[in-house]
Image 1 (cartoon, one colour):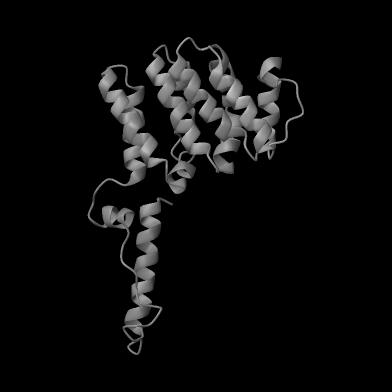
Image 2 (tube, helix red, strand yellow; image 1 turned 180 degrees about the vertical axis):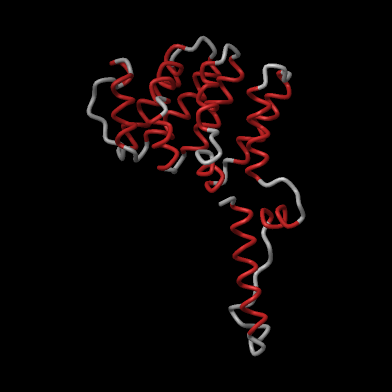
Length: 208
């Protein structure tokens, strides 16, 4: 369910229960809470975060969109998925595949922004980490982090890779399969070993 609709439903139930209990005092802990931003958007007929996320990806994928429009759309998308509910809603909205596909863009800025959004979506989010792994995003991030000609792209891919493997062993295993030996490839890396992961990411950031 869309987070805004879910919030609106909870608000409606709480206020209905409160209205039936005439003895509830003003200071009671069961005092109805106010509507949050997402619920207000739904109630007032404005676009939900889900709508805005879909709209942003439509602009990003449209070959007729200007570079500036795509950058703005990517920036908006990244801000929206900072909320874990929105990040977890990406799968239901079928937004993961087109996002990962942008890692293969011919434009460095689009590769960079895609990596940034991926890093945001998977940070401390096992559902996002699982989805990225299934879509084959780990080998792509490793390849770009090591080989991309654009330094800013490499840096964002290191950020995304760092977020993708921490505390998620399957992604950590996949990364060590793909990384060159000088960056920890082939090693037995534990997903919870923050110091070891930090060292690998430091080496990747400091290259070239």
